[in-house]
Image (cartoon, rainbow, N blue to C red):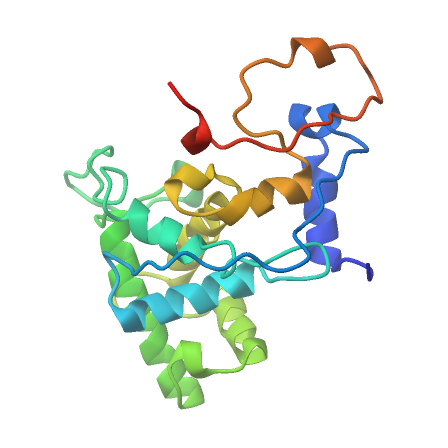
Length: 230
């Protein structure tokens, strides 16, 4: 295996602070020699063009490399598509009444938009920016240029009509990582390959046989809550 990319290597090193990673230290679950086929599914919330943007942008944020698949192969865009049809996506879990005032970043989310509206407006604005600055929609640009545009969004130098592009990028980055490492029952982390990267055991109910066995490799592959039987 070739050397992993610095960004993913740094992420895995930081993840080593979690209990699950220490539990599984030294254990590796190999990826399939042949990539498993993607399920035959279609987005339910996003339009085809919106979904093309989402899939490409998520892959830029979490690209494939020598350690494993990227966001596209993990089905992250489908995970986000599913989120938009939940109380979270519709903003039903938040206080969404006015007045709305611009506040400092440490006060958290300040927009009068539910996540589904933030995505819809953000994707439209991002594609408009890509066409204006680069002559093509975001998904039709090279990965290198896509990364340049997302970097500009992240840096706060780009203002969309309704909000700063940085807010859209932060929402997208958060949901992308959730889709990589959430339980596959929610639509992402296809075939638990995000968990395999970390050696995470998933939804196993009992680890008592492996308590206080420092250095012992955990021998079982991960389990999804979707695979558990009542």
